[in-house]
Image (cartoon, rainbow, N blue to C red; front, side, top):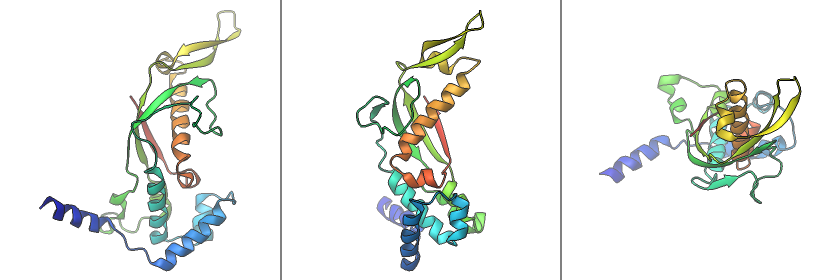
Length: 199
């Protein structure tokens, strides 16, 4: 009985995109690799409709499904992408969960109507990350004499600092998101939104 229910649910989620639209999208996505246009310009220029945006989002979801879950990642690992700026951060993290890769709820036409392509492409991906407590960051701290001094701080202390903790947390989330996007250049190109929760 459970298998029958799973099959029915899977069929409800499968969207039949016409082959000619898939071929068209694959062709114009190749142009996007070298063209700096914004997602809106891309959608307008190539007349990307709902079906095509769903197909692109499926590609994003497929790429994001390759992100290693449960693996400890350090910004100093030899396989950490060199083009990701890590600034003064020496952190390790483990991505424990990525959800909402494909925003199925937006595709419920009866509930949400005809959702614009840009909304389908940018709908938020949710990521849970376990941040290692042993990380550090170097921060310029203003001393009593007005001079700034570069100080190494434990990462958790820096995150909880009332003056700049929000900025440290934001920068860590950016590093993690750029790492995730190294598996999905499309997510970066289409500016897919993200909600990263650090634990």
